[in-house]
Image (cartoon, rainbow, N blue to C red; front, top):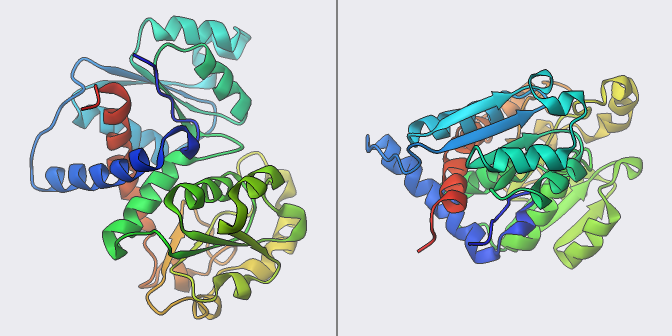
Length: 303
């Protein structure tokens, strides 16, 4: 059987991604109804994290526990990777001991190298290029609350970072319109933009991007590893803060999303993130359910 990895949203087909979203909703509803479902008994997930984490770590560990399996957390200093063992060797060894691996690291190329030498599924828990697991939760959240996301309008306001890149891939796969507003020097990868074609548009004016949007999304202005750029970034992104006035440019029933952690009155005002249009807590919860669907898809035989 061919090993499937999940490094970006483009690793799965459109129909597979849509099925994952609805499967995540089914799994969530079954859990809320008190049904016990443990398809991964005796299975083990290894988690290699050299970047700090709250939602990614908790959601994957809880997912494996509730599915009847186990999760092993590996920090930078607890493996030979931290002492220079080649990524390829680590991948070969872990393939013989565990059933899947989640990696959260800076370098996307490291995850690609690991996957290329792995005989078990590798999941991207966040890299400098992409954060696909978050998008599964985000799309699931919209579908639960508003229905099909096809043909909708999403506005991204802020940095052209790994989250922005994943929203670009999501627009391609789920076939919605993505409008990106970001300072010129912080625009997303041009190759990804070119591959997305006309489903993605760039704006210098956040109001133009947000106008008539069904979803407004932002993220922190300085991601992990960019702390030294905080002041410079704050100055550049200040006009791109999501406040109530900006939200009023979107549709009246538009949802506000943020992958968290959020810094109130920086990228988003407290009025918005704590307001009635915000669904950030539902997004965070859905990391658990969306990733359960992903683990099931990658580890169990497909019907």
